[in-house]
Image 1 (cartoon, helix red, strand yellow):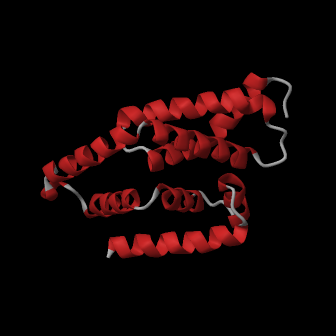
Image 2 (cartoon, one colour; image 1 turned 180 degrees about the horizontal axis):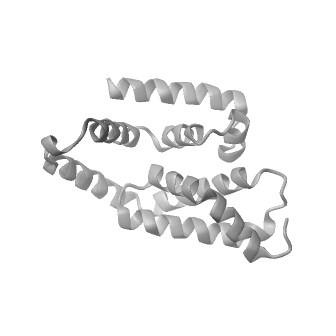
Length: 164
C-alpha cells in the first residue's frame, strides 16, 4: 500500500468512482439520498483505508466497504425507502409514454424489476454486472463462490420472471 493515504484514496476513487456510483444506485433510488450514500461510502473508505492490508484487490476492498455502508444506510433509511417507492411509482405514472423511447422503457422496466428484488439479490446482480468473479463477489458479501453461483442463479431467474 502507498505510504500516502490521500494519494491511495484519490487513486482508488478515480479508478472505481463509476462502479461505486452503480453500487449506490442499486441500494438507493432517491437522488438526494443517493448523493448522501455516496458520500457515506467515500467517508467509510477513507476511515477504513488504514486497515486495508492489500490482501484483496482494491476493487474487492471498495465493493466490500460500499456493500457494508449501503446495508447500514438501508437500516437507517428504511422508512424513507417505503416513501420513496411510492414516489417512484407516482413519477412513473406521470411520465408521458409518447416521450419515452423504447430503450428508456426497457431501462425503466429493468430498474423497477431490480427494486422489486430483495436487496441481497440486487447486490449480487449488480456485482455480477461489474464483471467480478464468483470468488470476488463471495469475498465481498461473505459467501463461498459456489453459494454465490447458486444465489445469483436464483436472483437472475427471479429478475427474468419479473420482466416477463
